[in-house]
Image (cartoon, rainbow, N blue to C red; front, side):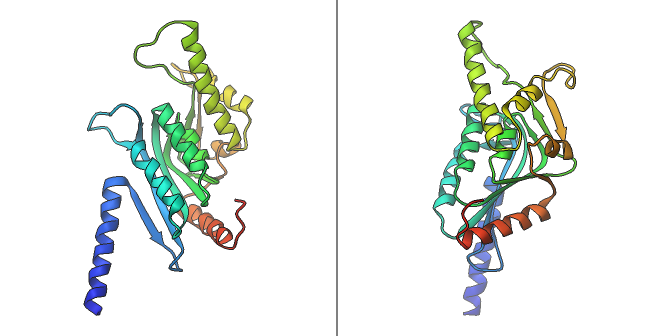
Length: 237
């Protein structure tokens, strides 16, 4: 019996290590057996409809989307912690991930531990509550055009529509307004060769983008409170 328990414990450890190595995911067992928090990492560049070079650190949205669906259906998982350190990436894929995170019924907390640039901003605010470490940075800028672009009014109208979707999502999931987000996007006085705004730590909180400055301890403590409320039937989070 004791040997069987050791084998099961070893298999559980190996499975956890494999999830961390392959997908940057792990489930933390809480004090109670049913109290489980799933950790998702969003790091590097958000890979969308085109594969990035093999030497580029990336988050593949086709891996994260089914995992989010699995989390929603898993009765044992009571909360999700998102660890974010991304320079941005594919706008469509990033916004799809943000919408999926925002639609989860389980409590969610995000923690920006390094960068949350470009499409990383909607990902950070998609959770029910957000943290940023003191040295963490967020960059809000207009949608950039890449690849072959047809220089026609319709093209610019299309990019404006995409930008409006991003602005609307940020405003709807944070304490700032659409007008404020657009003003930060079009700021000309901060980035020498580009438009946009850089927010560091407390500045992101003051701008109404992030809820609080903090680290892993604060994020897990907040999520524990939220999961307890969720467990007790208070689903408004």
